[in-house]
Image (cartoon, rainbow, N blue to C red):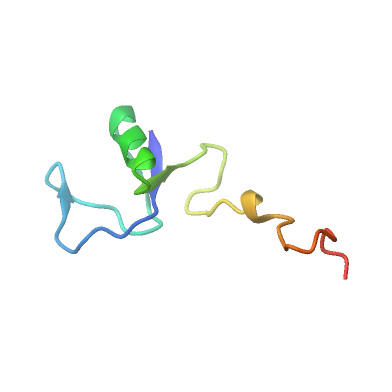
Length: 72
């Protein structure tokens, strides 16, 4: 499972003896581990079709609070 870290882990923290990926970085982890990290809010699942390193922007599209759809 490919995940993107949404939380910066404390300096020196390790996972299976390796340093954690940094905030916003992507990494592959076993599915069970990734699901746990996503459920805990520590990471988000990366859609394989999204560009590497890119943040998901679709969820913010059209959300400006005025209901006008961006026509000003």
